[in-house]
Image (cartoon, rainbow, N blue to C red; front, side):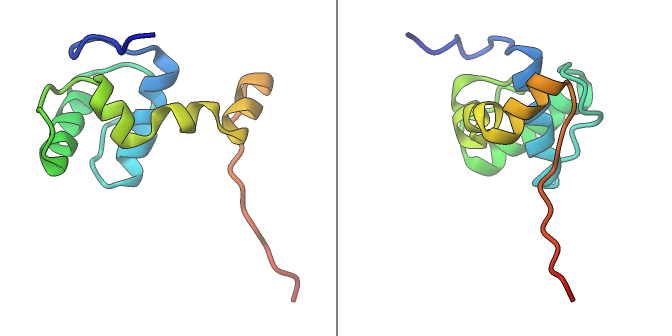
Length: 96
């Protein structure tokens, strides 16, 4: 299976995960909505520049690898989200 072309638009679930990852890293991609709008495109370009990879402003194969999108989408929390339609964030609490 080959990687998508450099300027390819990814599926909305991959875009949402990229938006979450970019937000966690402080790149402010705008709303986590699965759409590559101006803010997401700008955040992608800033991230790519910071990683010294080709600046495309799109969620290309190299950027997906660097952001670890496939793992984020296929990880346990993502499976719960797809099964229930909800996002769960793991938190740990210690008894006092």
